[in-house]
Length: 309
Image (tube, rainbow, N blue to C red; front, side, top):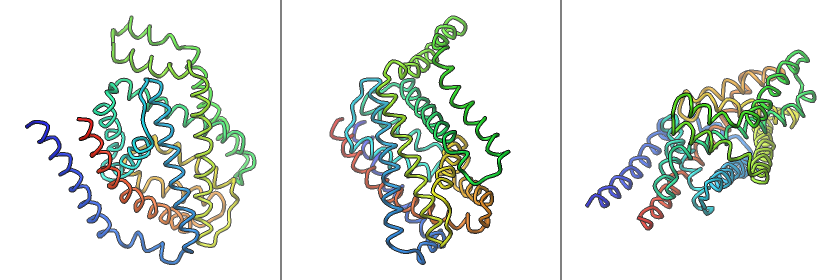
């Protein structure tokens, strides 16, 4: 009886989410109107870029789960990424909770271990973005003083990852000082990545590939409104916006990323309004794909969950 109630709740939740998606799109039809005047070919290429970006995010999840001997197939690691993207548009941090809940329920992944995977993911993400940022910053068309400040910022983030390796005994200090088993479990999980250099290398490569595809995505958005910026500038935009994911104040970071992109555009002497237009184009594509694929994979993964339970 309890199992049937759980299934009923999950299916009802899926139907409710689908209804909310339709309601959201109906109330925000004007947001998607920016796609009407864009070349269909450009839209298709931007969709492909978006899918590659999220496929690489899913692949990172697959790699991180391997640290704890948890296997996942493409349906799971790509599917849960789509569900997470959709959930994040409904409630801030909902994607984080959705992924954690799924892997705890279907893979018996403990909460501390899941938190470890998420922290590692952010660490490697920031490290990769910092390394690429340092390597391209002096080719970006911004003021020299700003280049130096940004280089210092990126260098500090990269050093944090290196420093953590040398203080890997911190977990034992916390255990002795605070007697926090959960904290120890999380920290030991984080430090586990240093024991697998090949896996760490794969994570960094996946992130670097994602950075350049993300840069192409932004480049195409500007191109779609007849504004030509250098691809390397677009890659720089992607790096800065990747750091903005640490600030999740609104569902899907709506508004925050748009303002950042408008500000970055102004650094290249591109009008704020053009930066906002490019951001709205990308947001429209992201919302449509997140909701359509998210609800599809919600029911696919729900079926998988029911079969295993």
